[in-house]
Length: 213
Image (cartoon, rainbow, N blue to C red; front, side, top):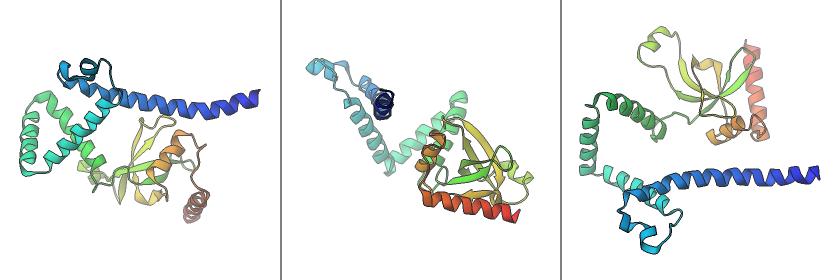
């Protein structure tokens, strides 16, 4: 009975969590229906809500905004909108910070969170996975000798919190795995390991660094 119970958990728990996350996302995006006049909402027209309709509306709005922002008039409107926001004291600091982060993360030309690295942390001989976020800038780089990179080291099992580090590029090992594979490895606390051929490559890289040391 214990074996069958555990097997049932292994089948149902991932499914339940997946459905819970999807329900949370769709439920949040469905709130966009509140932007419509009350007499245009499904509940007023047909007497009941249609789950997912707000999600479609949200995706449509995002697509139309992106389409409009790509033409000349749309870019001018965005520039005026941003100029207005940057003149409001408190909003300025929040909007500017969020925009810089989002531009870095979602820009197709950026490198942030597009490479998974292996780094010794929190002590020598102890390794963890980190994500490349860029290179040190501002006055910070004037106090660092040599080539440094900026890293984000996520915590387990919650990768949304973590540590920001600046380490010599020579002390990092670029992993032959996607960001998704690295995140699965972190969230699962090492249970969901990457493919075996990747593990062998990592061990060879670590051994090489120890030999050089």
